[in-house]
Structures are given as C-alpha cells and as structure tokens.
Image 1 (tube, rainbow, N blue to C red):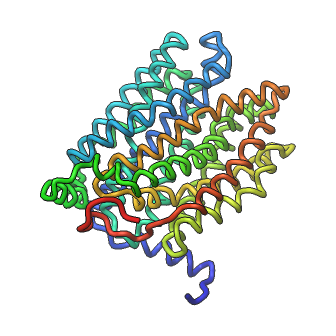
Image 2 (image 1 turned 90 degrees about the vertical axis):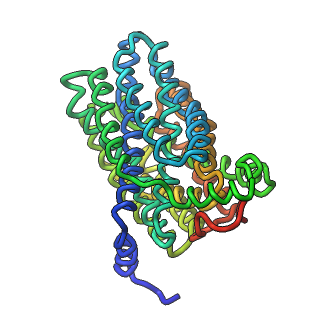
Length: 426
C-alpha cells in the first residue's frame, strides 16, 4: 500500500459517504437519531444528580444508583427486542422501543421520591437497551460493506451528540423549569424518530436470512449454541465490559467532578461538556472511517493507546482550562475507539441472530460496567472528595484492558451480510 498523507486520508474517508440510496440514508439517519435521543435522555439525569439528591433528601451516591439500574436493565431490553427483531424484522421493534423509552422519560418528570425515580429508570433501561443493537443492525445491514467503517463511526457518535444536546438543554431549560421540565422535554425529540422510521424499508439481509432459515429448518437457538458463536459471545461480553467501563468511567462523573471539586458553575460545566463531546464526535467519525482501510482491531488499539497519555490532564490538571483540553483529547480517542464498535460487533454476529447478538453482548458489558459511577463516587468519598483521583485510577486500567482484550480477538471486516451459509462465521 502506498503511503498516504493526512489530507489524502481525510478525502478517502469523506468519499465513502457518497452514493447512498434514499432508503439507506433514511435507515442510517433513523438509527443515528434513535441512538442520539437515547443518550440524550440518559444524560439528562447525569446533569441533575446533585439537584435530585437535594429534592429527595438523599445523597449523590444514592441517586447515582439510578444510572446503575438503567445499565443493569439494558441487557433485558436488548434481549427482548433483539429476539423479537430476529423473528419479525427490525422496523416494528425499533419503533415500539423508541415509543417505550420516550413515554418513560416523560413519566420520570413526575417522580415524587427516590423509589419512584429508581423504578422508572429501571424501565427506561429496558427501552435504552433495545435501541442500539437493532438500530446498528438495520443501518449497517443496509449499507454497502465498503462504507461500514465511516458510518459505524458516525452512528456511534450519536451518543456524544445526545450527551451534548443534554448539556444544551440543561443550560437553556433547567434555569427556568428545573429538573422536571428537562425530563418532560426529553420525550419530544425521540418521538420524531417514529415518523422517520415509518419511511424506512425492512432489512434485506434479514429477509434473505429468514427465508434461508425457513427452508433449511434452522432455528436461532441452534445457531447461538454452536461452539464458535457461543465462545465469541462471551469474548464480546468481555470486550464490551472493558469498553463500557472506559466510556462511562470518563463521562458519567465528569460534570459532578467539575462542579464539586473545581467549583465550576453549571454553565461552565455545560461548556466543558460540549467541548469534550465535540472531541468525541470528531474522533469517533475519523477513527471509524479509518478502520475501513486499516482494520477494526488496529484502530481500536491505536485510539485507546493514544488516549493514555492525556488521562492525567483530564483528571488531575489544576485549572478548568487544562481540564477542558484534557477532556477533549481523551474523548477524541476514547470515542475514536468506540466509533469502530458498531461495525466490529455487527460483522462478528451471525446473520440469523444479528438483532439479538450485538445488542445483548453490548448491553451485558454495560451491565457489568454499571458499578462504575458508584465505584468512582465511593473512591471520591473515601479520599476526601477527590473525584479526579477516582477518574484517574479507573480510566488507566480500563484503557489497558480494552487494548489487551481487543488484541486477543478477531475481526471480520467487510463480510457480506445475508450470505448463503447458515451459522456463525469464523
């Protein structure tokens, strides 16, 4: 391969985005919006944890349990909606899923006590868990194989876009309507996704696979319990556990860290959140696109290792300006690694269970990583409120874990979806 300059690489990445059909564009946009709105609803809670603790006469650690419960319930949603999608197709389960988490988000604004809040966030976790796997499957099954890397990166960056949108809503809505008004508003954008999804056709690879399974009398259960598929399932759970510890370990506590340890105002915390989410969007899109040329595992490992030297800058730097710079750089590379994940997981998933397989492995990793926020809050509580130290001691080990687990695995870059063979590919 001839060496390429930086501008050549960027031009090569941008060229992948041309030539999509209307149905492909709509499917991708629907998946992206669904994931962005899912993250938006999730992070609304992160910005008001302190206020909820005061409203319910509780502690930050107790309210933080809401995020843990949400993450724990996400595998349930991935399982239920994934099984349904493998039976009936992607579209209808996706629309039901979006409606579910929108209604629950609205209901969260009526929480009268901590118990009610925790119960609603459990239900919200079911809706959030169903979104990612089905949206990624529908979008990437429709896209040409040679374009998966770029669109994988852009798709995953719906998450930081949702985070950034939550920050903007906090900035604009919270001063006037408080935390309840934020949750009431949180249902509106997600409902718009339903309209878009009504114009998206069903996944053609799913249709071909469904017909092949019917003719060959092969069940999803048989495919899942085949030895290669089952072993890969547990490997991907380990990989997603490391990834989710990395993502949540560098994001969930950060607004609280800025406000509690550095006396940042709510407005300053929002501005910094916007800055580091811009870094996340740029990094995820770029690294996802580059994975199409250089490979999925290679770009994950490079991105994770590049984040490592900037961890002290984002966690223990003495000024808000340096923390903002560090957070931008860390999120550029952390979400750069994440930008490869949708393509990587869907390519490693058998056709017959692609609605179930990537989403459940992703969300089981989330569940295992759900102790992150309480763990970091506990570390801070036992070190005199040193949230920066909590960020540091969690982030460095999980970066190394992402690198090691990724290096031990395989990839299937560019594999054709909906092929002629039944069962997992190796």
